[in-house]
Length: 541
Image (tube, rainbow, N blue to C red; front, side, top):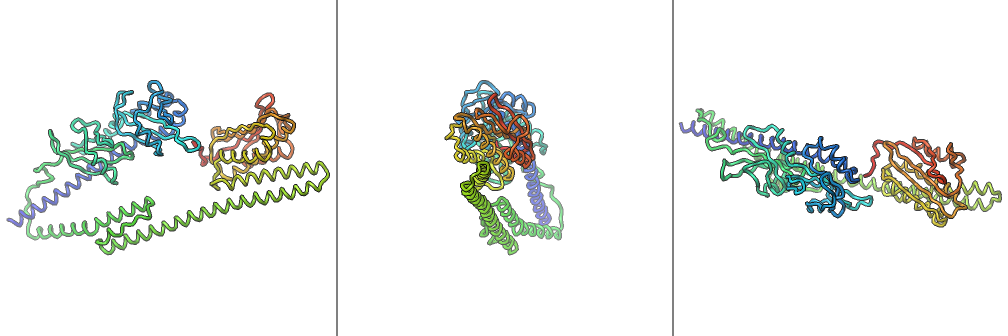
């Protein structure tokens, strides 16, 4: 009988281990479901915060709260903070208070775009909350404060209640300090558990003995935020449970031999193949994240030959991919340098043509011919200014229109002598990304309009020239206005005439837009273009 009893004990032990793995899989599956529920809520909150960030920053906290309060359960407060951490707008109470969680603000100040806090008790709302802060910056990239949501922890817990879990299993929330929310018997877990879960890819299983209850198996799962973790709790199986003790079974010696053979094969496969395949998979995950310089070949010295060969192949592949990436980056840099050099040479060639026209105009006595040569020379100078601005721009395929036009106007102001004529130049330009093919006709239009305004100002000592570029829905509107510079000859509230007017109409057609004229005041007028703003070109906040 001893062989039969021994075989039964082995089989019971194997069943116990299988049940343990299955139980762990169920807990991890429940943890993944809980993580998914929390992530869906957190991502929903983040999306609302990003969508309405500009409205909040403008001081519309009450309007934003009224608009999304019903769509985002648990939203308590909408607030905007300046760079010093003072509230300039809040949907609850009055602004002017300092942000309570200074560490949250410091993380945003140091460069973290989106910060999720640990669970805290808010004195203003008298509730347990998680805070979500979106960093904001000015046009020069300097930190200018942040917009924030405070979210009731009960909203996270309500999301967890929708997750299906095995019988006897409970789901709670934990924060980065190990504090547990939603549980009665458990208020704290070791912070080391949270740190280990934060560093691991998958959820981690821990076991804890309670003073006034059964031992508990706990799975800590990391969400997308360091401040929120899912905690899965289930009582540990007892000594006489199905997991640890099965009725003895009667087996013959042949079946005992079969069990030993199967166990040996299983251990061999697990220790000789599966363990190493997991390491290979981890190595592939590292390379998938772009860390091609990572090398882990020493770990595979004890692995089977096939696994060592596979790991070496992955390392070689990562090295080749890294070299190819560097080569592509270098090729792009060479291409960009070549395009910039082309713009530079075009500018130089245009300046040479301008010099030829200067020499020719000196040899011409007819005033009309001199004027025609001067006009041609001036427009060629304008082209040279545009190309000079383009080749000094960092990006060649896309142009950030605000710094591009500001640089162009700075060149143009010096070239046409705006400051010498005591003419004020005022600009209001939206930040937007345009293709270079669209930026060039915009620039030429601005040059033509501004220089035309300067021709009107020949006998004027004071005046104003304004350049406005704004977005109106799916269109951009460019207006160059002048005031106090004399009567316009291109604007009679009708179609423009002359070579300059025809050029402006041509620029409008290149942009698939239309030419507009308008009076800005009794002594002022403006000319501009309204053209479509491509869907793939996005406005920069």
